[in-house]
Amino acid sequence: MRIPDITYFDIFQKYDRIRQEELERYNLEAASGKKLLKPSDDPVNFVRALRYKKLNRNIETYLRNSDLVLTKLETAESTMGTIVNTGEALRAKIVQILNTGVINGDEAAALKDYFIKMKDYIVNQANIAVGGDYLFGGVKSKTPPFANDGTYQGETQETTAPVSKGVELNTTYNGAEYMGVNYASGKILLVDVIDAIVNAIDSGNIGQLNTATINVDLDNTGTAKPMKILDAFDAGLSKIMEHRSQIGSQIATLNDLKTQNESLKLKFSNLVSEMEDADYSATIMNLQKSQTAYQALLAAISSTRDLSLLNFLK
Image (cartoon, rainbow, N blue to C red; front, side, top):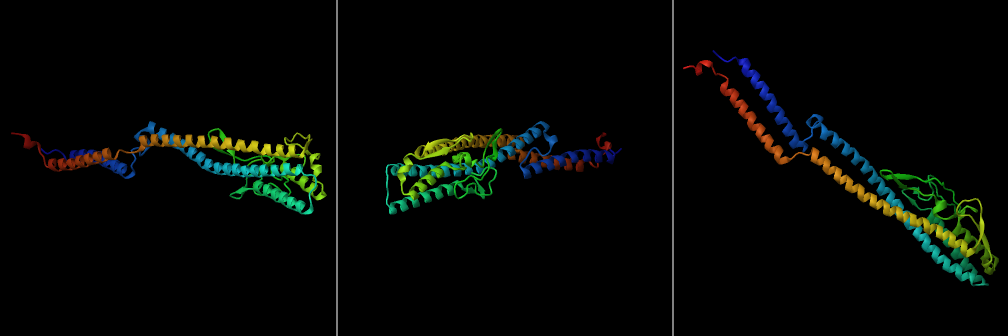
């Protein structure tokens, strides 16, 4: 009596499918380097890995924004530092002319040329742009925020970008505040002072500067108060220095946040790797075991194909 061929076929088909699936899986693991190939492999870790990947995508967005924001912050801080340095040099010159009552024509021409060039330099610096965007124009970033005479023509609303969860930092700035605009005239207050000095030089009597005043409203209160030339200049320069300091604080904050985000990204990447990545040595060993088992299955089926119960009767 023979064991039915259909029985051999069923046995072979069952174990052939098992070994084929094992071989396919370990080959895929070896090729992809991943042990989580589909959700059913480990539903819990598969969901966790997806969540960590989503967090990492958010962090990558924050890091890209951080690079953009840092470039603009550093440019703004450097620009304002240049204006402050220029202002300090101008202040020394203003103190000098306040102590001079009468000057000759050549001296007047030289002084006037100096102050006009400094005015143009300050306005040009205030119109600094990065990548085609004017930094100190607020949301109106495609046109120069300051006219040639120092009048602010930008917007007070600023643009920001998220650099961490719940944290947004400026990408453009309200030039009226950062550049110390005198709301009474609409001009940068430093420029107002320079214009007053140039007018005094044109009159031939710079001695009048000791008593001259400028109506100043730096806080947009709608109420201007008269200030002497040097006091007005100091007020405008202090306003710029104050906002420059704020930008410096933002740079420090951004660098800290960037370091934290990079650390979190590395941590989440390692967690995903632990859940998803295959152990190559274990995968190769399992592949070899499956290949050996499959070959043994083929050999066993081949050797038992012609067996009969009569062979076991004595």
